[in-house]
Length: 380
Image 1 (cartoon, one colour):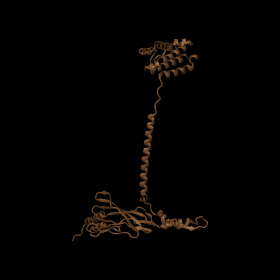
Image 2 (cartoon, rainbow, N blue to C red):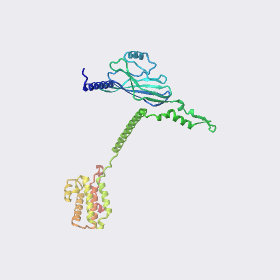
Image 3 (cartoon, helix red, strand yellow):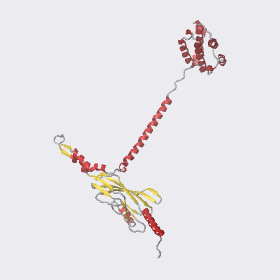
Image 4 (cartoon, rainbow, N blue to C red):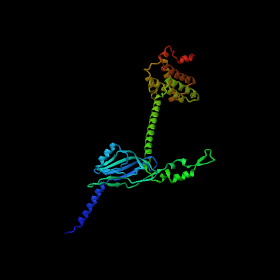
């Protein structure tokens, strides 16, 4: 008989490894945790199983219900025909408060990620150790197998005596109440036993899960409030800005009269500054003409201004006074003429009454108005 070759042997080993891998792939994976790792006796704690399994794999989960309803008994009887249930706890230590249905957390191809939760009441003090486990059926087997979690769970249950300060009261004749708290005894016992022992246990994020959720919700609410306040404040400021009225522009004659008064107070021609005086005087009149009739007088020569105003209705004396004042200013600016004091005052009066006799006013005010001329001023 021929012995099998090395290739055949390696093929057999490879097939065995593949079969083991397939078996492990069908085998469920289990992890578990308590919602807290330290509680008081009588407190409730959540026990959570995280299960990863193949779609075709049947599993059996722990049964914590010691007092099932008739409906639950019927469902359990049907389930027992397919897979047995089992108990993994001491009924004197844990009491079922609520049994939540299995949740499917995630689906990856044929793999299912399940979560099973129980709410349990802790009925006995001391350290409680629990090895999480579930049942499952392998292919071609009639009896189920057991899958254990990798880590054993520890739950520290504090005594009432360790948490009640009345246990640490001692007589004290010097106190008004007749007793006092033995701080040394309380610190010693709470450090070695009771609730302080949770400091020695490994920290778990799930212990503060609720606080994190509440904190996130509080931050979201706070953010919404800040956004709402900022939005309302922004709208209020925009509304206030729109309500602020822009100061109305002063009438052209008011601006011109104010400028003429300021020019007269500077006493330029009295100090021999004839060119500077007539330049300022004509600039005031040019700005007035631009604002009063919309003529770009600042960029026009004297002849162009006279031409632009030829179609404008105004008193004849006012037109002649304007021409005379502008002509005199041109002689001073370009021919370096130095007019007499009386002529300088007369040109100022011409500019002033040109503004007064041509200013824009209501029809009611213009009715019965007496025209003011240079001769009127001289007669006065």
